[in-house]
Length: 91
Length: 278
Image 1 (cartoon, rainbow over the protein chains, first blue to last red):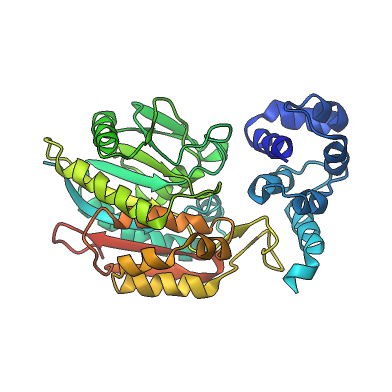
Image 2 (cartoon, helix red, strand yellow):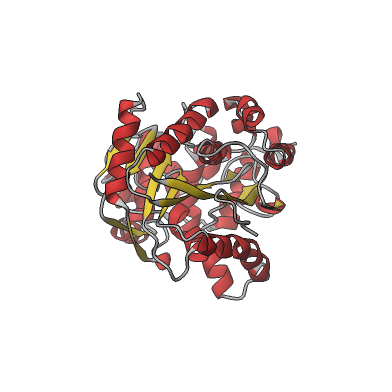
């Protein structure tokens, strides 16, 4: 999860990375260093923050994808997906 | 010798400055909570603001110091909210004195010779010192990436910062601020039903307020265990910034204390040179 966390952190500070992720998400993700796993690339492209959350991603960093509206997310969508992924423990 | 003339505990929600400027429904409430502290700050006539906060993954990630102090001549921010852009002078000579004192007192504090402020510094200072530019000394406590320092260690850090200021030969008037929430979850499983944030442990928020009101710093330190801070949310460690601030003066009830429950945070003020802060 370090690579996903680092990518989310870079999203906050690198406008060029945000543009690249909007233009060609898969290409930008495959260029990320340290490299993301295939599973991580697929989850990010799908905006599947629920899976990334369950896998142990840092939530403060992960929510930046919603804040910057990447991978089809915004903050309400991000929050909905986190709530859905953790439905059992929230009830 | 240096003197600590006041102390504040404040939150650092990054949206407050833009909400107030944009006429958000909470604008009046937010301004009303910062105003008494801003007026007190002005009355305290500080030469320096020592500001204890926690970096939000902006400056530190690949390398994570437990404690750090900024000793540059100045810094800009907010690095994570560019719309809050501001440059602030840093009281570099006193910052270096404090750093040296801390190292000699066995606190292995990292020295930041270049830095950028994030919203945790810039957003509250938008309200606390909107016009004046009192030089700051930023002190960072790791409140996010476990393992966190213990509450007792943070209190001891505050006490040693006080000793450093009081042993400084220059008659510097210092105000100390500690910034953070008591219960806050950002983006994690314990968010509320209508937001990407939440207050997972309102009981802890009330308990911290009760202990602050009673000046019960040792009790707060004893109860601020790592498991309690985790129950308080993934930003629950920020109370450590308050605890370090509380270490810089003898325990006493605050003259001003107010709370914004939906945000899990509070505002507090102590005047330490005999004049009232509110």
